[in-house]
Length: 211
Image (cartoon, rainbow, N blue to C red):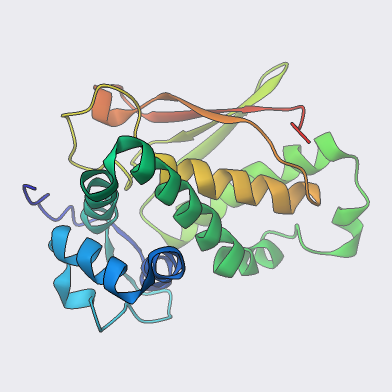
């Protein structure tokens, strides 16, 4: 695969660590090493990113891992793994940011579901904007929320796709919604993707949970 040039935009090192560990949990040590080699990130193979919030995990690294998953497991298999990686990244570490957003305390837990979503989604968008170079916004519509990533790490530098590819972000959103709502699953679809030539990456979140 051709190397994606470094972007100069970053996630915190911890996000990279969580993503790589999440994939290792699914595919084992040899599997994740193969993915990192394929992604041109062999420097991380036995030397995972540090567990801190220093902005050092380049957007191009996230995108390269996403491409490597597709190359190794095919579009469908890669998509499943990317969703799992996104979900685990939230479940294993990002939810600790929930407390920062004020959505972890008891007063929040007793709010009606739609109020939780109305408060929780913008709070998470704000955290991404604060701790990383990913700028996210949320808009509420009648039956859905629209989560927009204005500078997306997951498809950074890509143009060769024929459908949206930001499944790591979809998984992250699914898991954050599950946590904010107290255990519900929600339908999340990527409706615009920068890799397709769209201005932004946009995700439609249905207000009514699936379960």
